[in-house]
Length: 229
Image (cartoon, rainbow, N blue to C red; front, side, top):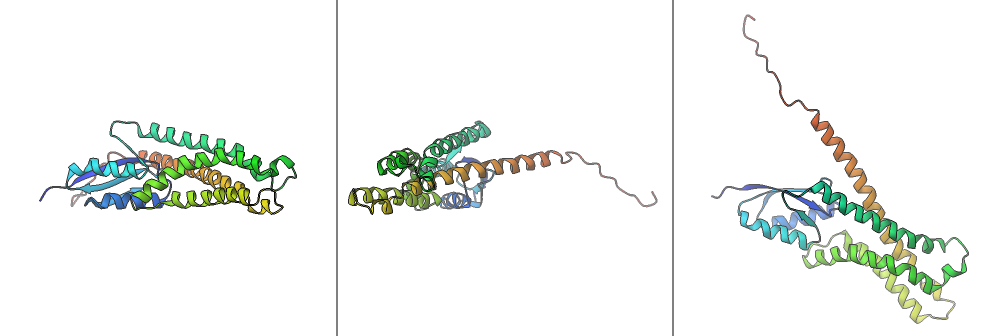
């Protein structure tokens, strides 16, 4: 019987336990055992009997929409770059979402214009489409739907429902009852904010754990008590 190799992979892009579960399923399909995927540390460990399947597993994980950091690459640098990109997307979306959200509380005529609302929502929707839609489609294609599917369905439903309302009720006093562009934009922006806050929290926790581990004694002295001494 071939000996199993213990594999450790660094994976970027995991945001929740659902992400870890989907990756675990992909790894287990290739006959791996003792699979453990931790989304907080971005690490997957498992035992693999046929090491020739490792490139296939990595490719399947990439097809799910995640990034496998190759050995020798700086995982911390890649992770920092990834989250810096998410933060930029959040602040970009926030610039367009705030005016959309403001029209619900402020009586500013221009913000009630359906074409202005559409123009403000489109940039946010495109960011959401690229960020969540790509991951959602990849997970569905691999028969392992993740949370991004729900996020994309929610934001896309509000967006296209509003578009249909603009077409069907153009010029009608009922038009504003069918506009939910702010809902579509808010879903995307709030989830991006959640990803940013979660990453900061996880980073602080993992840093504290590493510092605590560094305090452990590397060497210890064992004292034997002999009879009569």
